[in-house]
Length: 568
Ligand code: NOJ
Image (cartoon, rainbow, N blue to C red):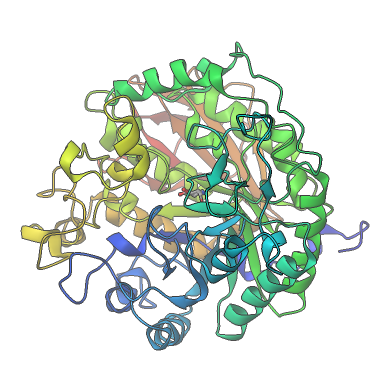
């Protein structure tokens, strides 16, 4: 995109106006009674997601966590065939039907591109491991041990704790793995690797995929000289960023005691060569019409995260995870969003999510006793009215809670390893709650993970019938958003003056259309002064089911915990 583009007049792309929905395929809908979700099950639920009418949720795109062939050490994030569907989820024909049925409903498909590493069961790794002189040896990162005791080549740690190097008895060398030892890191300096991965993109684009979420996109390249990472000392600002996990106290302990052991990932993440690869990948994507990407980039420094937009020639969108870690304070959310808005390059599109398959569910993070219900409503309004593309995590729309999984039912390798200090990620991955009955309408048999808490109220069937449910709030918000270009593509400006304590107010503006979002994070009612507005203002939507009137006076009263979208 030329640097002198007039962003105001740019015609928005579909993904800039879209609302995305993340499906964790294993937990969405089981069509064959094996307790595991599958593609056919997802197809059965497409009408729930968007049947073209406001009776459905109305989302525009789905990001699928991986359903490719995998031995499931990390539940699909360890892929053993990039171009096939795992039999537990279905077949390539099922995928084709999914694309067809989704596109028929104007739902786009985003796949998960997990190419920092492959499963050690991937034929590429099997070849590479077979001998030191195999032509594919250099597709992965192999190194000799150091000294007579053949210690690991350097101090690099994997993201799941412990050394990033695993000894291979057969060829007597170490291989690098930034995650589990069953997930071997590809060598992105090898042009053949790049070529093979780019072929994977082409394969899925040609089959109808509309985009990719790039798993750990900051991780692809590592220092060629394999230099040691500097040691990380607990920084003053880290505890402040941590969420309120008072329902999950073990989580706090985990962060406090484990963070000092982390390293500054100077030589393992954010290498300049990774940006070059992302630029090439972007060119490939842009050679197809209407494809998009969103990156999972994790950095302590938001400027580093923002650098992955490049000059609008790397990622189309980039998640800003700090939003998930804000404390329950209006100021924390405001500062977080303002910071990101001020850092990302002009014209760059933010991507926001409240939860995903790696984090405890937002509902429980903010529940703090029994506040989850109104806070989830406020968060829904925030997510769907910020400037940026919202990603809803499945079940968030019905207020699914983080589940406490008994030890013997744990599946996530992290939970198994760190129990009871860290429960792992299973609590956020429990089956979608469709109905109040055994199996939650997800399966007829024993589900792979237990059903989450409070199924009697947190299920789709019940909430569909209640006009004031969280689900119906989500539906109204999503459909309203479609009619309000200012919400989809307008400017964002947070207000400073005259904002009551613990409230967050921002404007969304496009040409003549001016919208005000007012969020009350407190337990007190708040008055917002609208005397400067010369036109009568109107409430378009409120998170408080008790609000009756639409027209508002000069002094607008927000109920405790209420959020409103106003037309100015
Ligand atoms: C990030 C994914 O979101 C997470 O689930 C996975 O374990 C790691 N990447 C490794 O692929």
